[in-house]
Image (cartoon, rainbow, N blue to C red; front, side, top):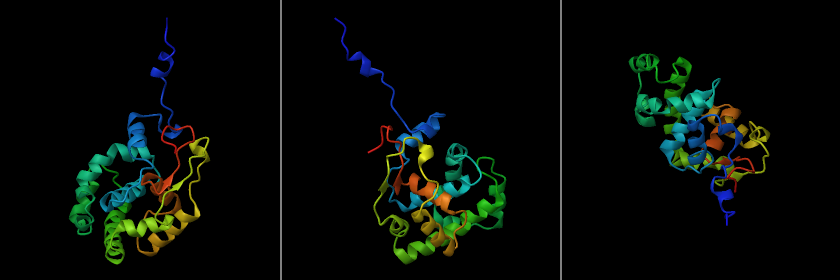
Amino acid sequence: MKSNNSENIDKPISRCGWCLSDDIYIKYHDEEWGRVVHDDRHLFEMLILEGAQAGLSWITVLKKREHYRLAFDNFDAHKIAQYDEIKIEELMQNKGIIRNRLKINSTIGNAKSYLKVVKEFGSFDAYIWQFVNHSPITNNHWKTYKDAPTKTPESDAMSKDLLKRGFKFVGSTICYAYMQAVGMVVDHEESCFLAK
């Protein structure tokens, strides 16, 4: 007699539609996207990577992520803040990263602004999570990822404050993507296996 259990064995996992085109996307979606991050170094890394994405696709940045970690001293803000013109020229020759002078310069400036924020608030975590009252906003009612907003009043407020503090490449849309990336906002589609 044949068991009906075989129907469930190979049932495909349902994921958000945006991540289905590449294994790198799937791994990022399953292991990182929307998961709460409170580690300052990781929060800084994601802010820099989201800014690097401006005008490009996220997968372009994900494919270069390990190169970024090597090129930018594993996102050590203290080291990056000390980069000089020689280092900038070296980075401009690095084919593993996005060789955009404005973005490279903004990374150095953002490291300096980040260090000021850490000094003022005790940690970047304490500063950045205030924009969602230190608790993730969980949506999980989107039929498709295309229904999710590209910016919100929270991302507007974050962008405005970051810009005021000297950060670059931190427009509201970039800030919203950042909030999704570090779990400040959880926007999995309602059918996704990670929806809560």
